[in-house]
Amino acid sequence: MRAVVQRVTEARVTVDGEVTGAILAGVVVLLGVTDDDSEKDVHYLVDKIANLRIFPDAEDKMNLSLLDIRGEALIVSQFTLLGDCRKGRRPSYAHAAPPELAKRLYELFIEKMKQRLPIACGRFQTMMQVHLINDGPVTLLLDSRKNF
Image (cartoon, rainbow, N blue to C red; front, side, top):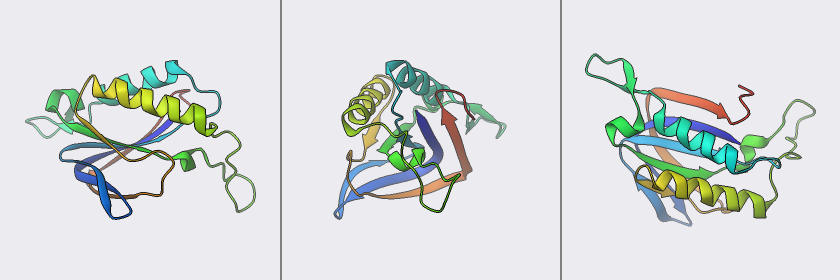
């Protein structure tokens, strides 16, 4: 399971002009599910993201977590995070999870994050527009298999 985590001052996702989710201070999580992911991967990333110390403390050092600041998370499914661009010019999605597995683990991710902090979401398997103000900018790449 892969995630791009961006620290934001605000963000929203729209589908066909309708806002489906919006947050203020917190993170945008773009989430991609691989074909061999399980609940273990969900639990790892939920814990990692909720506790990442990427927010400034009183001395402007990145020492506080999303939980510490009582921030929000905007979670957006993004299978293109699994695109393998090492060969040719068209990304291969051979290791992206099939829709049934991806949806189940995406929804579990949402459920587990919701137990820890306020969240908003995009719509699974839908064309979306994500609008955000990246704060810092701070952008991190996470992989539940610790590939990077």
